[in-house]
Image (cartoon, rainbow, N blue to C red):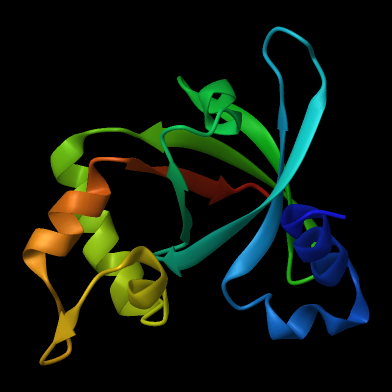
Length: 141
């Protein structure tokens, strides 16, 4: 069992509460294969939109370019959404500040120094080059 398998197991289990505040499962359909791909992702919610950060070297998000329906397991409940990618460099930097604001413990894992409760600008710029955000609008009420 790899790390993603373990995270998925926890998010599906009654123990999900340990992670569900900032982690969920996203299922994306492959555009070419039609195969469903499920992966655990970190997220934060702002203004009715879920924002997911991922590395540009991952492949799952490429199926969302131009927009696509996704299935989520959010706080152990199945939810449908519509997802699209945010690739613009300036927008990614802005979102990264928001991500660290909403999930401050992420700063350490990203290697971002926090000084006077503010993320270090050089660190955020550095890590944002290799990241992107996925915007998910929930379709279920």
